[in-house]
Amino acid sequence: MSTPTATTVKQNNPYQNALQQLDKALSFLDVEPGLADVLKKPQRELTVHFPVAMDNGSTRMFTGYRVHHSLVRGPSKGGIRYHHQVDLDEVRALAMWMTWKCAIVNIPYGGAKGGVVVDPRQLSLRELERMTRRYATEISILIGEEEDIPAPDVNTNPQTMAWIMDTISMHEGHSVLGVVTGKPVDVGGSQGRVEATGRGVMYAAREAAHHMDMPLAGTRVVVQGFGNVGSVAARLMAHYGCKVVGVSDQYGAIYNPRGLDVNGVLDALKTTGKVGGYQDAQPISNTDLLTLPCDILIPAALENQITAENAEQIQARLIVEGANGPTTPEADDILNKRGVFIVPDILANAGGVTVSYFEWVQDIGFFFWSEEEVNDRLRAVMIRSFNDVLKIAQEKSTDLRTAALILAVLRVAKALEIRGIYP
Ligand code: GLU
Image 1 (tube, rainbow, N blue to C red):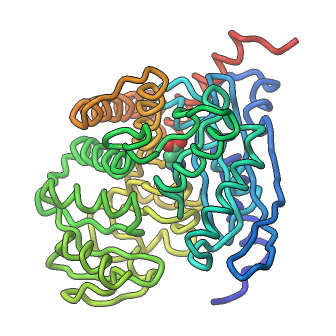
Image 2 (cartoon, helix red, strand yellow):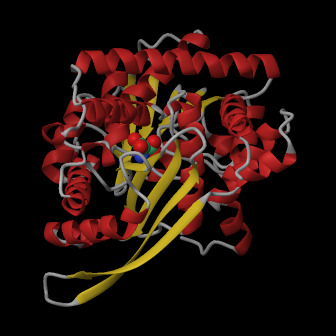
């Protein structure tokens, strides 16, 4: 891999990308410049350095972050990711995107995000638990049921959330169910939460395909990333008649133009730890996956995957962003010019935080819903939000990302204006 130049590093800085997207949306609006400045800055940023006792008796220092972008519309909300490349600018961008996401689906939350610089595969389960509990303790000055509610993100899962919930509950002396969402159902989690992001991606894809007069039956789908979002999206797209022709994970990608058996890929992943363990497909590189012949592309891995370098070669007519920030602003311009329809992250993957909100409502009400109830409400929110954004895109003759941001900015700026500037 070539060493990135200073310019590519700068271009691919997620926070700079998030600001560039925001500026584009602001150019359509008449937001007072002082208020626009409020939206551009995170409200609070916490960096923590903390020790963890390792299994071999040594002590290792870790660095983590929790950023609150906005608390204007309610408590802040957003996941925690464990990744060796996490940095403050990435967490800032992800926190800002959470503010917009919550506003688009109109749930009463602001945006936050957290991260720890770690490759969790290099820790034992006990080390991971101790690291999680210590990180939760360090950020406990910011998180809380009514203040800021974390959830899973890249490399974190329901078990991680259970440890955080337990840690905060031990500090408080009683169970605080609503301090995190995405918990196991046995400890206050919601039915349907694990699947919610992927399910929401499927609803978004269905609405977009319908808008484009693209029938789902036989439609070729490529999914980048086979984690909690990508694997569920792939399975559900196949369930609705699509032909999933390519998928990938961090180790590599597989392609079969006749279609993959998604359940077979899931089985191979379980037994071999990689999608590449699936036999009835051709192994290809992760780079080639994105430019495969297909109709719908679902990037569901990390940021900056669709860039100025590969945007011209993308063959999909519809991109539905399961990941946060997978497309750079330069790639966006290229794809928009080419007429590729993009359902942006802050709309397409908002199903996760929507069901997180349902989980939190259930936790604070101590009253739990059936899976069917959760999925029905999720579907209604996704369809309504897609159409709200589409209407703005048509009115303003702009792309869906800018339209989604316009809707979000309008809602957040309005809340800010009504509340006023303190004191
Ligand atoms: N990490 C997810 C996201 O990026 C979910 C956040 C949440 O449920 O709070 O949307």
